[in-house]
Length: 393
Image 1 (cartoon, rainbow, N blue to C red):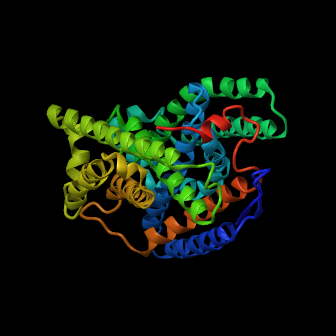
Image 2 (image 1 turned 90 degrees about the vertical axis):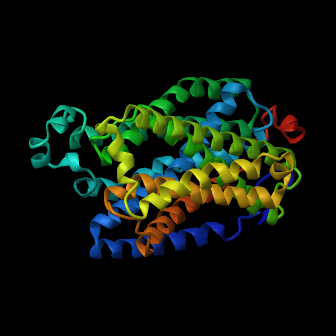
Image 3 (image 1 turned 45 degrees about the vertical axis):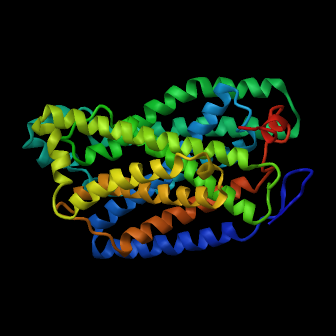
């Protein structure tokens, strides 16, 4: 990778994009072979992988929206990274097609005979039915795509020539974009994850998913910045101060994830209602019990202690390790949510999970890298760029 220090454009984009594309295609082909052996397992592993990578794009969208609404200066130098990550979302609709084809294998409520024999599903039928499900999928992706399109459009226009009106246009998109983001992410998580077990209730589940979503986006951003630093790109523009701030966000939302997760569990445990408690009891069967114990320790207790010190958030190698660590546990969290719907008596992790993860991930990274390297790596005409480069904690 080689960077033009005047235009902040890459004259040599490196091989990451091509490698990611090749790995992604191979992973999807291997994953498709798994469909022939066990299609139900394939759909569950694919849904887990798809939602993992989608959350990184959605978390980056939240970061961008928040940046504009708060008029943050420190994050200006990181804005192009988050914009490029969220630009993958419209294309993720294509990768969502296997989930749509697997509706009947994933979602119990999609079977007419099951609905006919279940009073609760009959009451939920006006919402949980295939046509309305497809309409909602379209709505979610339309909202996300529109927000991503306009923010990227105005940002690219700002690179050509500074115009104050473009800055205010991005804020005008972000103002309705943030509540729309909250609404669509909440209902998408309910539709795609919670409805795997349509008898379960949780009014806090959307917030729980949001917390993990932002942790994943921050973690992935740290990994990309570490890769850039190793290639000698933006080493002066993105400093230890920016990594420190990202470390604080990673720490804060790790704590927030634990708070929401514990709140959800405590209320259900305390009420002890069968229609709520069974979901956690199912994750106390066989080896799921081990994962249920590992998750709060690995996703909260250990990173909480590891990220508390100021030095930990300013150590390049340690922060990179913790970012990768949190991405691993974000996947484990989603796996713990999705897979008990298929493997009721214990966790099963094999080559199909790896193939789906690598397949969707390779395409995601390729889409992101293609966008990220197509223009300036920082918003060159943003009035807050200089202040961002000089930020001090």
